[in-house]
Length: 135
Ligand code: TYD
Image (cartoon, rainbow, N blue to C red; front, side):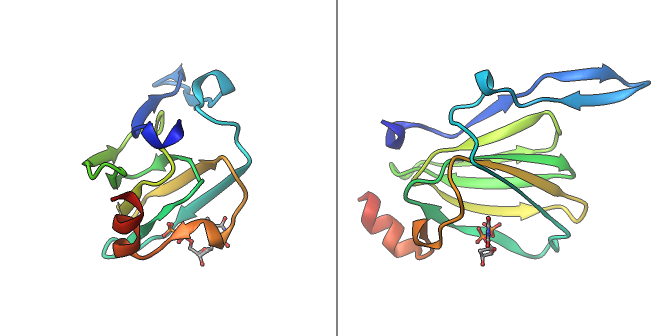
């Protein structure tokens, strides 16, 4: 069941060289879900904390294509882990029902691969509600 899944880092292939530059690829064999939506965030001020929500069904992979993104995840079992995304060839898999707080360096661009279309009803934006739902 996906509620037993834990967040983890996915390492994508890094093709190229220092001379030519690099390409990374997210092929389906490396992904824990079928991608239904891709969005990206950028120009996030450093003093802003984004995220601050969980999702009933949404699963995501976050990639910092530039800059550094620090993601703190709290799983349904209450385990908090901080992940630093500071290489464009790694992604963070976030299972459903995980609370996330996210901070961005000023130059950070984030790409998100998601398993479903945008649905505001899928968000849990109240931390106390998240704790009650996962107790
Ligand atoms: P949100 O997911 O809360 O952003 P973050 O987790 O990065 O802080 O989304 C911020 C706003 O953007 C919110 O009003 C919903 C809207 N939004 C969409 O309309 N479509 C989308 O695909 C996403 C991800 C957000």
